[in-house]
Image 1 (tube, rainbow, N blue to C red):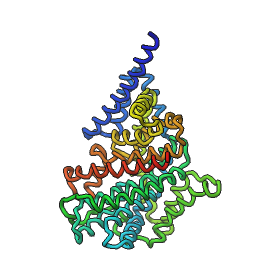
Image 2 (image 1 turned 120 degrees about the horizontal axis):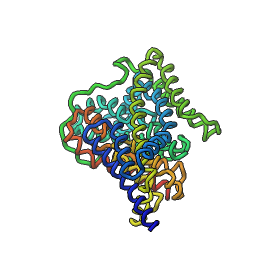
Image 3 (image 1 turned 30 degrees about the vertical axis):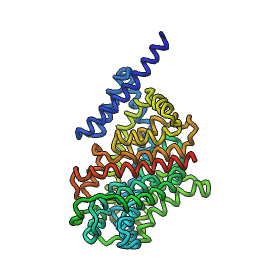
Image 4 (image 1 turned 45 degrees about the vertical axis):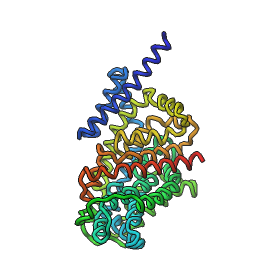
Length: 425
């Protein structure tokens, strides 16, 4: 009898977690505020799961406490992102890459430029918006639909996102207890192979549609002449150099210090100290929105973690003949679908299933890397902001934008499979 009651209670907690998550997704799809949707979903999930009002609130707060260190690091990462965008450094780097690769390789150049910008710390949606005017200008001279141009940028951005010091990588590493630089490095080969796979997809994918129209505005330094290339690269170089001190010299420089230092260095080298305030404001605006989103994801992650949902997923993987080590990319993909966000997906998956992933024999570094790449599989669904921001950047309507979903999912799945292969082979 006692065993039966425990089984029923465990089933109830899992049902509550699933119901709460489903409710949060429904609210987001109904265009409600994502942060409040996640909090309300967590509250409902805990109550339905039998935790009681006090227990539910305590579980939600515990979930938020787990992500606080990552939130602080993410907020400081906004200095580098803001500096790259507001000084025009991102525009200079993108223009240089597309210029070097030439008009014949326009699609690959757009993909490589977006990958590089995202890899050095620019948000993927900001990277796409920054490069969109270049894509639209190129599209006026090429027989290529704007959907194909957009796919090149999105695919490149996904490749860069799994090796970047962006919030998704930071929080996956933080929750798995892994240092950031090795997590970034673990996905380097999968990212490069993913870019090669994207080049093949772009060559053979048929995406007919309207040709590129007039250029779109981008927030790239208020129209001023961008800094020289060496100055544009100085900020990311300083940040990556500081992070690399740990594996190279055994000297640990936390991302909380390295990323803002890179941003300040980039502003100084660009000779645009007057843009410090604008850079900080832009970075805080972008990262502040992510930080608030992570508060909401922390609450739902706490409820999921308190349930037996992870154990049920493991049993399901086992029944399907899939090892428990694959819980990392699978959970990242599922949570990215639930939240339509790489960051939120990586946050929920790593906060909820980290202990189970480690118990399956996966190292903290590879667990974080697989969650991060798994979170790119379905982060582009229509109930998230990325879908609409990228559509607007290329002047595409929602119905037109929907045609890219299978291709985006394919690219994300390739990245997740490549990371898993690198871990287990």
